[in-house]
Amino acid sequence: MNDVNILAKIIKESKNLVFFGGAGMSTESGIPDFRSAGGIYSQRLNQEFTPEEMASHSFLVKHPEEFFDFYRNRMMFIKAKPNEGHYALSRLEKLGILKAVITQNIDGLHQLAGSNKVYELHGSSLRWSCMTCGRSYPMEYALEEDSLPIPHCEDCGGIVRPDVVLYEEGLDNNVLSQAVEAISKADTMIVGGTSLIVYPAAGLIDYFSGNHLILINKSQTRADNRSELVIREPIGKTLSAAVKILEENI
Ligand code: NAD
Image (cartoon, rainbow, N blue to C red; front, side):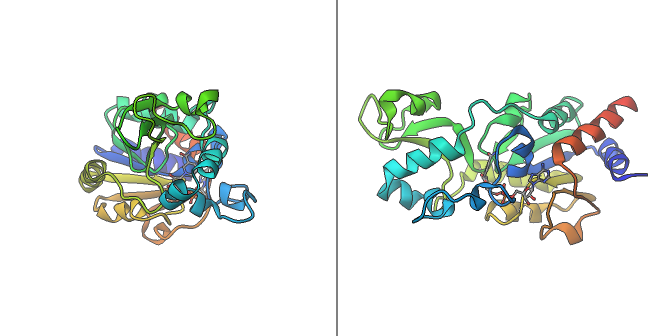
């Protein structure tokens, strides 16, 4: 049996599957990840600052113009569409097998593909809000000409920023505890498209105590050696092929 068939069989036998993913989930949608060759970290963006520094809270406060320029040009992909992997996960939820998607991504593509139970550990680029009064704005607001170079609140004049977790910022406790609960209850967990380097998000997989841990990632991760199955193929194509086999055998 090849890896995709094994994956399909494990998924079919699962009663409580969770998916834990990262930026690699969306590379097949044309959104670069951070750490692959060709990812955001390999691009020479700015002579002075690294991408990690530019995606940090202190950079937003000290260099707001450069922050918003970086954010608009490198972190927003308004035309990106879900890929076959996002759709495969959404079908698994509808079949009652997949109980939650836990993602480090901020692109909203799981929801666009139809997934309902999505825990966004790092927030979403689609939602923006005023840092002073909290008024919400859609992401399009940040792209309007009047919002250049720094978007300001129409009510109070405060800075309007994306509702994402920047470096140096804490994760939302509510999202975190729901994600931990979903992982703790799972009998199968698929981890994919993530380098498992960004903490505390990457540490969440340690709450998994179910039967089947599956890794789908192009490069090596710290969880490979405890995974039952490690697949080094593109995650979108792999998930889609496995779910197709599963649907044909229901
Ligand atoms: P990362 O860039 O550190 O790692 C991505 C991993 O995915 C790599 O190990 C790479 O080998 C693998 N990969 C890339 N394409 C793949 C594919 N098609 N199939 C299988 N594996 C593939 O990303 P990370 O671990 O998510 O952590 C970095 C941070 O990046 C996260 O906090 C996230 O918020 C942020 N980020 C998000 C997006 C997005 O929302 N789409 C994009 C870039 C960065």
